[in-house]
Length: 160
Length: 53
Image (cartoon, rainbow over all chains, first blue to last red; front, top):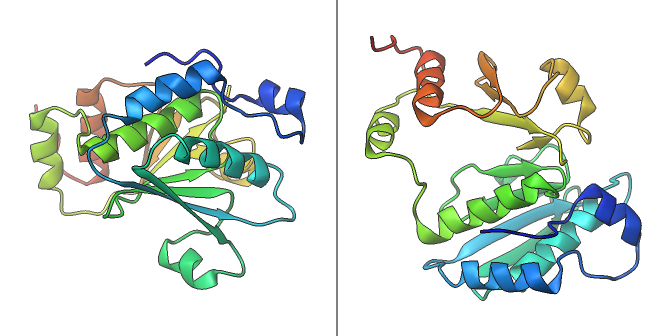
């Protein structure tokens, strides 16, 4: 999958608050084709708030554009403080936060705006969940299945 | 996934000086992309399993 103009900071700055799309027509078409391979539904659960969150609005618009590209992708938006029951249910303690899940919650969370390279990470997670395939080797899968200790992964990234 | 610029206090807490930095259970960490087999090794370490030779 090759994206020509994944949403990146420079792109966000350039467009400011106007209503231009984050994704180019070309990238939207590439993604639409990719998402046709989804065999099961993917749920994006997004936590946001209006104030004191620099990238919340842009993150929501990126997710809305992604969700609009496939009937298989559903976006639910919750207010971090007002919908406290949901924030607690998903263990959300900071925003913007995006849960990427199927029918089952695999514990995948994006904290911060999924732009630049991380936009590709988001798309790849959607594809993994919707296709039900992580791409890991059988050996890895077998060994991970046998783990008894819960593991918490935090991957720190920058969006460039 | 944690976007470092938006959560500088976490970047500081976990001394993130290069990205991508992966932290497993706040005990094992590595920086950069790793082959699957090596990631599995870090997972074993974090899970407290003895490394296979």
